[in-house]
Image 1 (cartoon, rainbow, N blue to C red):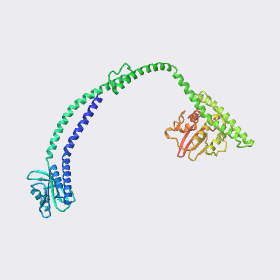
Image 2: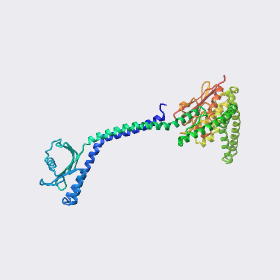
Image 3: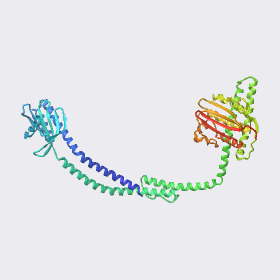
Image 4: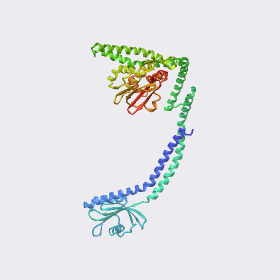
Length: 491
């Protein structure tokens, strides 16, 4: 396997180990010398602080101070020379102090060659620098300046050949790294192979299980998480074999009647959806007018008679709609004859709008319908009323913004167009051709909120197709307009 876990484990561990050793080599190469010089600087500055404090306090004659200073000089290999203001030696820790005295004179009178020393750090009262003794060819770290008492001084400590030490150290690290990588690589490869072997066995087992070969078993004996996983996979294999056997038996029984049951269920859901959608508005009207009678909103006999007439009228419409829903399937299949009759379309629209007056008041919707003259058309009156009712109900349920519904009737030479406009959100362009499909919903959450089933517009389509009349929808910036046409003259 090209990307086996064994190779990945070995490569990962070997790479991390090699990178670590290489980083150690680089750190040793580039930072060891700097670290050594920095350490020397801290040591000699510490000696300077002790010297400056002792001289400032006038302790140069005290045995305790002399012992402390000698201990620092011996331990850290530091040479000290302090000269009084008259140019005479005052403190020195090396009998051969002449060299330091000459260095100090050169510094004070600025007669050193330009390349005699390299300044590392400069502070108030002293300078730390690196210099080379051209007689002995040795490097030194020097602190040179003036003590707080005003006396010039010089301190220095020898810098050993750190470059040679760094080179030797790097060579040693390189030898150790190469040897360690070779030995560790062999050990890591052997360990990764041992660890990955049971995992490869589990991979083979899972592959055979995907092919429904339940004879495959995990046989490696492991007392760790891999062994526990292997035992569980063996149990899973046995359980799957038993479960699949039971499922196949049950599936053979279900396949015999599942298609028939599916058809029955789809027919039942479609019928219930149609009925609930079409009966929702009439039931709401009947309930509203019945509650008005019970609460005695109008006590005069004419109002009560009007309420009763509306209730009876809506009940009759419900009965008609139930019959119409049953006939709709016949209409779509082409087995129902559409009855064409002449009737007043204006009166039909006005009656539909009057029947939903309570709903318009409850939802605070302003209705605009200015048509007063009669317009006679030829069509199936009950089905046209169904189309108008569906358009009005759809407009009420989707009315937003200014909350206006406008119903217009326009008569042309051969037809009459009825349009229902409501303010609200336009229909997405991608959905305009799909809204006529049965059960299609543009906004499922909104449709569910008012109890729609998504078949109202499909009923409009079936009715219009049955009468061979045009229908459609048009978007505006502030709303949507649905329209349909019916014949305005006899052929």
